[in-house]
Length: 68
Image (cartoon, rainbow, N blue to C red; front, side, top):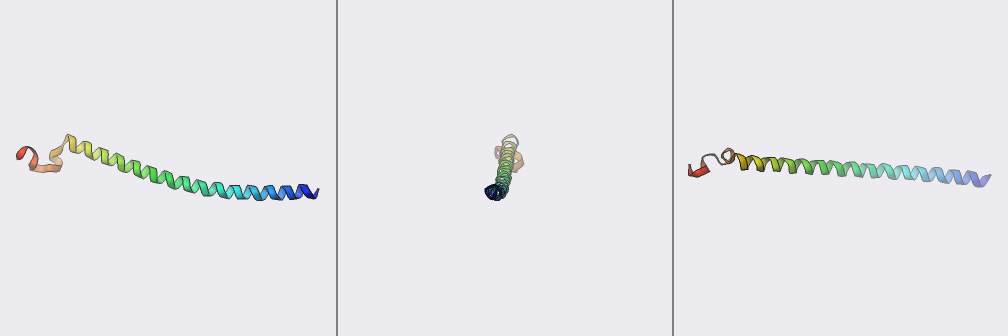
């Protein structure tokens, strides 16, 4: 019976350690997703800006377009 108690205690400690490790990994995943979303947002903004410049260069160049 003592062996069963020792095994149960060991398994509880192991489970606790695993929970801690999972929590740490979830924090890392959350941070990585935040960075990914930020990079995606910046890329989207840059693409939108370049499309705007392509379609409306006069907005950025003013009177310099067509030698004016």
